[in-house]
Image 1 (cartoon, chains in turn green, brown):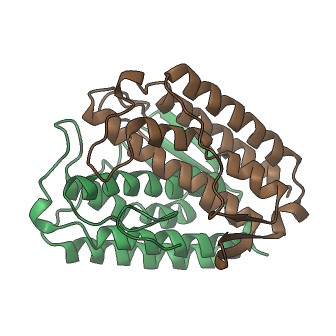
Image 2 (tube, chains in turn yellow, red; image 1 turned 135 degrees about the vertical axis):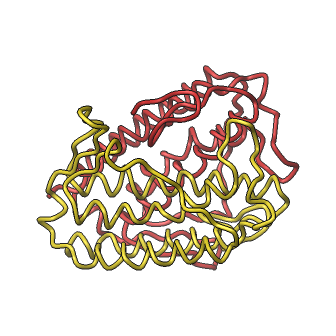
Length: 166
Length: 165
């Protein structure tokens, strides 16, 4: 089995779960945050919606320099805007994953901040540790944001207090 | 490629991050919950501390029936929480390290009595139900920390308290 083929079922499952969370982020709560140090609802949701694009970036480049390309979050006004960003990023990411040969996953990829190298790892490790796990991490934070706003939380790895997929 | 060898670096990295979160769980907040429907901090932290046992269980069995749940250990101090995590994750690491590619490709079933929730290769169970599941609940704990003014460790980039970039 190719590495792509081994990654795609999990990618599809996790992206489906991520979309179910993003669909429930209400536009009238976009500026809400649970704490003054927290990202607000829309900033965190935009981050989750955009993170799949790191799949495409990792597979199509050999490095990213934060200093040369500072991150500016996309502004959103509606839940639909979030879903449009997410669907575009996921569509491109899936195509990049499906099109990558095994040798591509073993090439090194570097994250740097100007002169400072934050890490250099094989692309397969970047996709796992920095892309997929990172999406799951922030998506889970969104589930607490949903809970705190009395919005039903979808079951992801088992039943939530609202919904059972068992 | 040996699948176990490809999994261990990520397992080690994620377990190290998980330990940094669990270390900061204050015993005097174990009964705190952000919402009446939420797990309490102590219950969620205990769940995170025990989840890697699924790696050991998946590799030692062909199925698990959630309608026959085991006993959840009572944890009432941060030290006990860490002891539970350390023992569970060490056993999981050993099980992962000793598994052959053939072991990973065997199907494994999660059932709820007669209802089959899923059957997938063990490698897929490890990814989704062990790693991703731990990362999911650990991330929820980071919001619990934030709401209790406990500094949040940096995991995939800087937090508002700690930067690694």
